[in-house]
Amino acid sequence: MNRTLLAEFTAREGAQDEVADLIRSYAEKVREEDGNLAFDVYTKASNPRAYWIFETYRDEDAFQAHLKAPYGGPFNAALAPLIEEDASVLTFLDPLV
Image 1 (cartoon, rainbow, N blue to C red):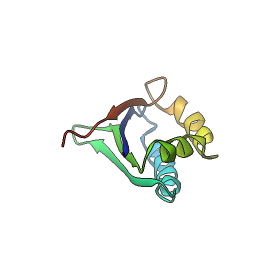
Image 2 (image 1 turned 90 degrees about the horizontal axis):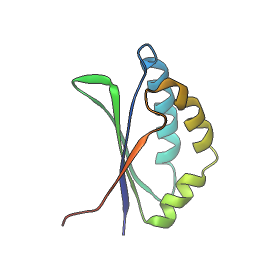
Image 3 (image 1 turned 120 degrees about the vertical axis):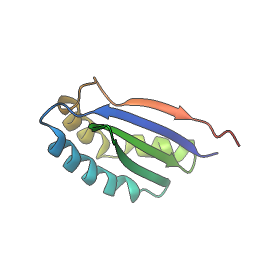
């Protein structure tokens, strides 16, 4: 079964461009992962500092491999001081049909 989640965070005022550059670079790497099926980055139309990232992995093993990727830790460390939350807020999703 696929592993799907929504990651949310809000860029601090003035950090929007740095966050956008960081997430673009990270997205390129994640999309190359063998088990990644989707890594779609959005901002809210009503608040362009608010990010929603829709992620789907082939299965739990692919998701765990994503978590262990060598670029994940540095990405999160660089992101943390640029966002309002302590870290990305993750919501795991199950398909209805």
